[in-house]
Image 1 (cartoon, one colour):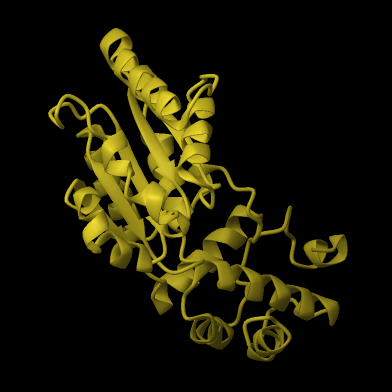
Image 2: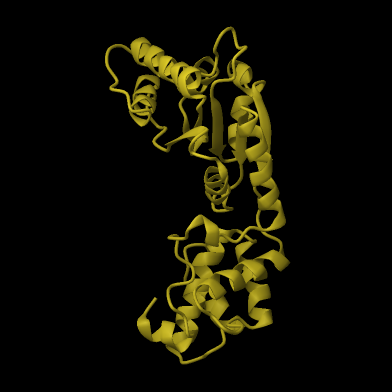
Length: 270
């Protein structure tokens, strides 16, 4: 966003960027409840599934969860490169746990399980492995995850898996080869698009956090913004930002319905 547009709207920074700290997140009641459910599951040492369409805010919810877990009791591991084979997946996990992955895939797997077991016995630290874009896991890795979490004949919950992905991830887990993992997942949360009311609240919160002192979107412009974006926060960010730029470019201090429609028409989403 240009300095001229920021000045016109009395904004201190771009209001719709990704570089937000967790304590400035806007969370509607549904997302707040999702974080609470995940927190209860992980502190209860259970596995979780977070599903939702692209752009609805799954990672914001997971970041909210991770921020709540005390470092003295939990060891957080985040894995996003999931389009690799099973051996390379465990190599990533090994490195994230501070281990040097050596030997065969079986040797790396055993080292990971040993590190997890020792961490619990010696420090009572519970690892939480967040696997992002989990719907992209290959079949061999996905079908093996329940073995990773199997300790002492499945009697010791020494690891929590948090699988994050598109809705089709659940469909894959229902397949026979993955049902052993599905039956071990204690909590599933669905992240949905925002309602019209919460879309408006979200946009206002983002603008206020950037310094806005007054309404910058006309009410009918906000209504159209929700209708066009279907309440998907990532799309809202893009269209709202472009609408601000378009309005600011003509010197308008209030974003109108026309600016929102133009922003939509020139976007990749139209």
